[in-house]
Image (tube, rainbow, N blue to C red; front, side, top):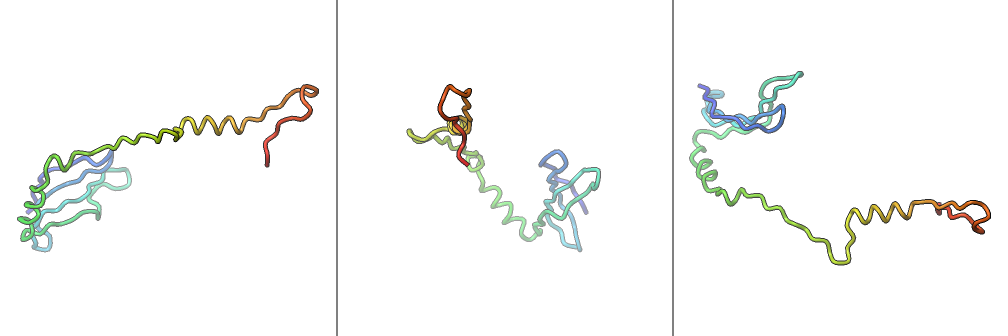
Length: 115
């Protein structure tokens, strides 16, 4: 017996497929990746099978997750007051790498980078 429950898109070529099936006469919930590409179309080895005997515990664990648990918190990092930003650091590095060459006679020596 195979009963597809649904699928979730993972990326352009891969879906996560949930299905109830019997494999080796053992019923359970299978969660596997299904790939569609030029080289291969079908299930991959990536996945898990929740045996029918373990399904009530699995369902209880899934149902214990709240919407609040799944909200993604994005920390907003503020730079330290004396810490320069990435843009400032890049600009400073560019300035340090610039080579200033004056025309002969305008200065006693030319400014060259230290190697």
